[in-house]
Length: 244
Image (tube, rainbow, N blue to C red; front, side, top):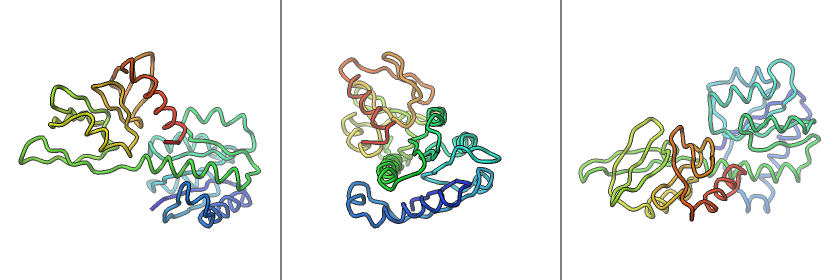
């Protein structure tokens, strides 16, 4: 189920977004490009009302920035502490505020008054972003009689040493299984992984920064191979931009 929240103190603006979501679901061309699955939609008249709904989880949040009480920016900061992966889209009548969205890793912004055409383009980006951020349970077999199930979203990176793969996890665990990096890359292709070098496959959702040849992946450093650098940076750019 795709979970959407609209947070806007202007009832007319909130109603317009609701209508556009309904129109998108009936738009055959848009649905071919980025299909909207079964979904739920909640509307909040303030940032405080939105925050009071926690621990509810949302896949996409349309946030007005300028609201009485808790601002949309503050609500986004608190949301990031609770839900690291939600797609945040700021809806604002002041484009200058959009730059501040990078501090909370907002996926995009829409300037009011919102047109359906602009909304549909941004909404398709949101759907694609959420699709790629979906997690999948991966079965690993460290031994013939042993199986460990992990979530693809919890993998920081995969390292190959000789004929073994080391799955480095966000919780600090490391699972050692026999296999090739090519097999792992094919298996995880739908879940935003990219080759940093011949020996490392990185989960792009955990990349914090890239400095020169070094990538900070969840607090650990992985180095980019010279021949893989352009492709890796391109993959990361598409991921951050919400595209494949």
